[in-house]
Amino acid sequence: MMDKKQAVEIRGALDKLTIQRFKSLRRNLRILKQDKNAMIGFLVIVVIVLVAIFAPWLAPYDYSEQHISSSFRGPTSTYWLGTDEFGRDLLSRIIWGTRPALIVGVLSIIVAIGIGVPIGILAGYKLGWIDRTVTWAVDIMLSFSPLLFGLMIIIALGPGTSNLAFAIGLANVAQFIRLSRGPTMALRDNDFIRAARALGASDLRILFSHMLPNVIGPIIIMGTLSMAGAIRTEASLSFLGYGIQPPLPSWGNLIRQGVEQILQSRWMALFSGLALTVTVLAFNMVGDSLRDMLDPRELLTKARGKLDAF
Amino acid sequence: MKVSYIVKRIISAVVIMLAVATIIFFCLRVLPGDPAIVILGDSASEEALKVIRSQLGADRPIWIQYFDYIGKLLVGDLGVSMITKQPAGMQIWNMFPYTLNLAISSMIIGVLIGIPIGIWTAIRKNTLFDYVGRVFALVGFSFPAFYLGVLLLMIFSIELGLFPIIHQIRTGSISEHLYKLCLPALSIGLIEASFITRLTRSCMLEVLNEDYVRTAFAKGLKPNRVYFIHALKNVMIPVITAVGFYTGTILAGAVLTETVFNRPGLGKLLIGAINTRDYTLVQACLVTFSFIIVVVNLIVDLSYSLFDPRVKYE
Image (tube, rainbow over all chains, first blue to last red; front, side, top):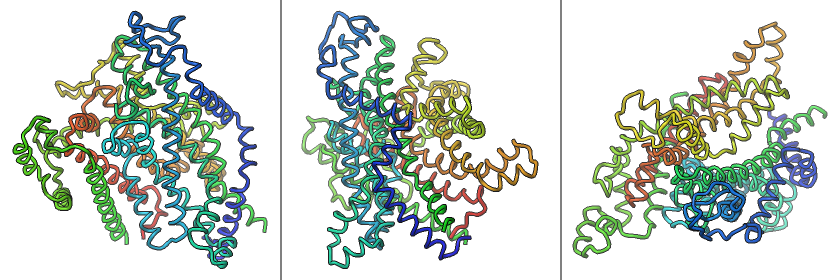
């Protein structure tokens, strides 16, 4: 059993390590470069982002350009991935589909961080009834699955890109409250916070100019990690018909179209799903290494190691 | 001690459930559109609309509607479907076995594939087997279950013709149920297997470093006994927790999978209700989904002591 003194010591070492951890973001990025999986994932993400930016120039046709005479083609030299019922080029539609995926992904994470982090640091800093209420609210939010929560918000707000981003963002808020609350609690008794308090800084000032810069690093990293989930949720909602609305292409609604016309052409569902899977995989490959880097259990082992060295 | 802990957990679960029901109620009330117009159509006369509104209770203040809804919910009444006029609870009860079968069979597939692969990849760390297992875990983890469903449908139903394309259940015989469960359960189960593989592997690697594992080996016990008796027991706790929390994902996945396979179930009922704007039924479905998640989490919490006698309830 661990006695009280030891527990205090471990906590002190942990706090120090946590702070060091937040400061050494750049060193962590260097470690990341040596990780082969993370590098492959990162390169794929860069390619996808470039494809999204340069979609109008990269896509051989416009996403809504119809070639009625050549509907339901398989892959040919004119249409590399084939065509749909209206003879629209599938490759062009998949290329344009990178945009809603990334836009909704990024926006939803911004919404989740923007709502979740202020609440999280407030709860972690103030503790007491605010913290209890927030913890309870987090428990409630975790009783919804993100997809069903997003679906509920979409039913209430109606479909569309910004509503979709807002819905998925709200569904992920709980996770970011948790993420920012923990480190804030570890930091709140640190000297620099106490000094700020002693100098008469207001709570708002302490939270936003002292606390936030110290906890935001790992949160942004976790944000990129949540991109995989957000992109998948976007595709799922679009697949169900409540996300991005046709004729605007998104990987989710392309898969839906592919399933509806699966007897005429198998290529549509196959290739759109592949694009979705590769993107999610790339984000997960980067996320895996990031998660290892930020693993609190690893922190604890190191803290114990330091104590042994005393 | 233990009983009081269980009671406390059950009370907190009930409170959470009520809060969830409240969120669902108010979220669906901000909806634009009048339920009376949904039922009668745009051309209905004002008098007819009034009659319907008072029948639905939609002309009362929202607070009274809310307390009415919560009161009924507490006795298990989920309201009456606006379209079919049947009790929503009955419709959900009729569809529930389909989704339950799907969730349980995919969980069985996930556990049967995931745990052995997770253990073996951990034992044979850095061998070819481990590498293949890890690739399976990473790819599976990123694979959207509904896309896997589409691929299974393409391969087994369209190319090979072994399974139907539309998984509607007609006769209701056990063999038909099992036959039409194969592909949907596989599509969720394989994804869950990859998730469990990842988790089991990382927990197992941690446990294998523990002193009691070294002691067990030093005593001269057979490796399989150490791995499957000593180590596995300690791996089970995080795995059970994760499988429990994963239930939510499975249920949400069921909405997608049932759509892909055209299979009856809670998810298909929810989507149908959204499309027909049957908001009472939508509300009832969402409440049911959350209820299942809360109950499963409660069971997971309470089952810890079965696997770990060190867990003491306070």
